[in-house]
Length: 125
Image (cartoon, rainbow, N blue to C red; front, side, top):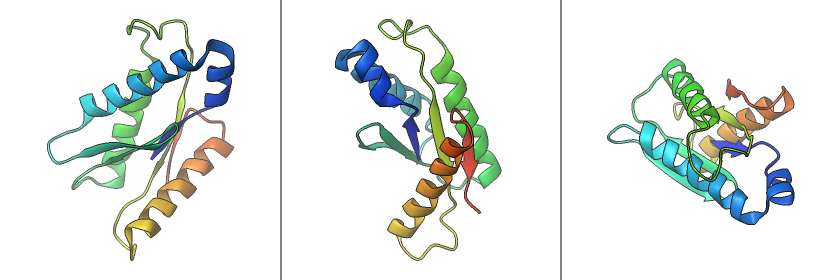
């Protein structure tokens, strides 16, 4: 699960059109990095998720770092002057009773990343 750090600031400073460009950029990167069987999705607002099939937490952390790296590249028209970062929370499905429990674990890891400096990824315990 990921969301844009300080997204309100982007909308307030650059306008909603720029905020929409940031969201489109994230969606494009998630689609680009998804492998067959993976499911990238927008949860709402500036929150996204990508379901990674048959990956270990270590592999998921590598994907998270790739996402962060790709989003820092300034090669997309319309977003070159907008500096933004994302925080990412990772949770394994094993040991969760429901999809809601799984998302709650990922959300908790996401907010752990935000509390510890943003622009980082955190894995749920």
